[in-house]
Image 1 (spheres, rainbow, N blue to C red):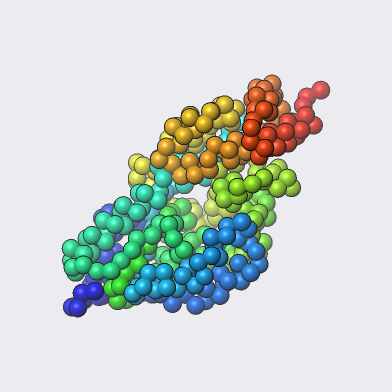
Image 2: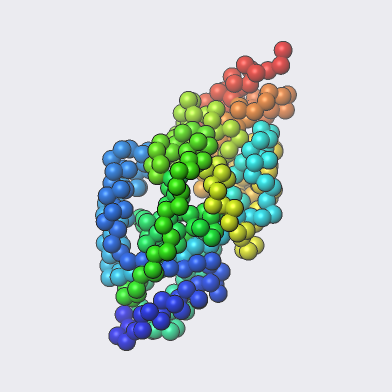
Length: 357
């Protein structure tokens, strides 16, 4: 750690350098997350994390930055807008059962790599100013309570849907952090909770995953069911998925604060391969080679081909019965994967009930 440091001036400079690198806002947080740690422990105790065992395996390292990265004294938090202005309007896709819906954050290249590279460049810029210093960059890559840290860094507040909200930018943005041994002053907190009596996100959630204001049961969340869950999607929840095959944005789509959201300026985050409004039957026809080629460099690839087919089968089963849909599902009845075969059988059974005549 540098011995002579004008910490307040450096903090201001870091914010400016971050904006020059493409972040819309940068703030500094302290490392005391006592309140957030207690809230997180209650969430785990309630079982709301479902099969995400990694959420509890790391113990206090998630809520105590210095336990994860020894020597950490402060955390640099940054946010980057990701809403793609050129994408087909979300509601028009959600209302078309013949098309598949992907969460808007996943339409472009994998954000993990993009943010990690930018944060690494920010760390290099800091080192050029103060000399070598201890630091580590995180973008969903380690046990980090990123939203409480972002709140402490003045980037916004956690809304009733538990996502971070900014009064000037809504919630369509990514977060990333630099843990550092620099003793930087925390950014003054100018953002407070402005959700008020609004409950739009609770009322819109298709599966009732927001069980109370500020409480999310991940086991019911469509993002968890379509991305994190490796086994069968519970039958009782399949119908509520509609045509959502990778994540869900409903709680953000109805949030009043997102009228202030800004479209991304990053070309890497713009839609690729027409996945902003793809035909479900076409997606279901992909073989594994095509899936890997079309999702190269995308967060979607983490699904793997088996869960890709599982999710699309559910979406097809939730749509109208037609000869092309029946044929597409029937062609997958012999899949070697029991997981896929079971969801295909469920979809065909659903369509049989709704088949004309």
